[in-house]
Length: 221
Image (cartoon, rainbow, N blue to C red; front, side, top):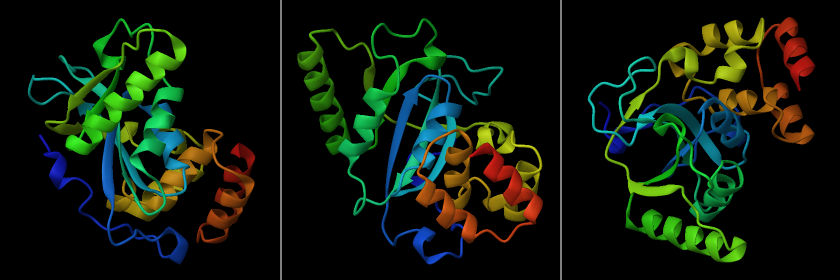
């Protein structure tokens, strides 16, 4: 098991100044159904530095995709608080999962896993605001993150890995840093349909990959 305080200690190999990690970041963790979609959605956001998916919120040891126990699929992200606030991330969370009714499977439940008291209070405040605004009971849960187990490699940046030609090339190029790369997070979001044309242009301009890879990425964008 990996303690949340140990997350994101490695540095990304991204050389582009605009995509280098800031000196100080904060971490957030959400359960929003299948983790492939949130991984891509958050990864395309300016201010998000890294994303990864995993299993959290349960008690059984050593969860895996085929032996999940009482855990939930989650996305964990590191972000620049000078660019994004935690409330910005909560806005994306509430707008992009089914908070009422709850999922029938604990694996796909909506949940905020707070890293500290400030996040916990913000999550409850926005949950109460949503309930008041909609006049509906909000079923998604708010808990304190105890630990997270990273999901298997084939789940990390799934949309990009599933892109022919480009996925394999980028996995080879980034190696062990694939999951923690800001560029990879952006590309994973772009191929899933997120991000702006300006974002895509800037990231592609900084890629040192064969023309066939760029062409395949452009085809998906």
